[in-house]
Length: 424
Image (cartoon, rainbow, N blue to C red; front, side):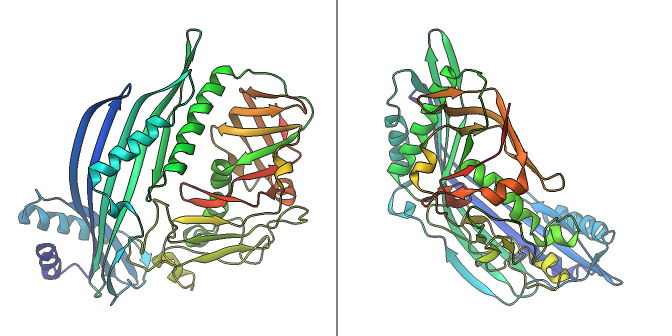
């Protein structure tokens, strides 16, 4: 680090600089058909160097990576190239964060365990979750990661955070009467909760079995559609992205502060915020890649856009207080009783190829890979169907469950019920 800084300071073309250190130490287990095939330890690190060059009224920047194998002569050539590239970038000027130092540890219970014991406990929980006769786990991989991130810049900023994550990759498989279905599962978390891990793997194995049994059948009428947390995460991150400083500055946003996203709400009012960390969430951080300290920012309240968020440069361009690139979305719970999700007829989405939205054409929909169709009497797994509808109408009538769940970088209602969707 000192060598890099000395070379940057001695280069006449470098006005400012930023260095991002990223180190990942991992302990990894690889299973094939339940048998442990490989145990691996890795320790990878790199440094991303960003140089800033002021030319005229503009500020350009360019980045490159430095590895342990990089020589000092190669470092000088990389700096020369970055300065030349930065001179071609004509961004309006802005100020880097500065004069703030600190060391942070993201909350986790992983530090209570030895890495090998933790990985073994996770693996045992995964395999114990398979309680269905027709299902199996063809492949399972467990990764325990200790990640160290440090940001140093020319304005006196020096921050370091240590965070732990775990990732389980699995291939849940269902086989019956000579036919098989394989699914892919990736589950990320930063706190050991055996019950939550068991539910995650059991649900995916159950999905594999249901996919094997699912039929493509017509769904009569227009039953209510139930979305689960995965689809809610994808849907509402679209709104958060639309309210990001970078989107707003480039005039690609549809919504602006003061706009009502629900023109005539008859269901639950939207409440959305973005935050830095949550217990159990692998995306939790104390600061972003610029070193900005992260806090919580409210974006939508009672169905009305009330704020923007985003990184340092675009926040300054808009005259807003930079919040940093906040990694986690929170959606407020709703008022729907359990009966809203159990009384038929309904179509409960289990898995989609991805929920699609188009703010300009007022569209929401997508292809359903697996759903449970309740016709009022029986529940059947179905596949090969799609849903579509008007986004504005969905937002006006959507109702959320009272209970919430953590899914990836999303914390919000476990389910939502929407009306008036076309099913075909």
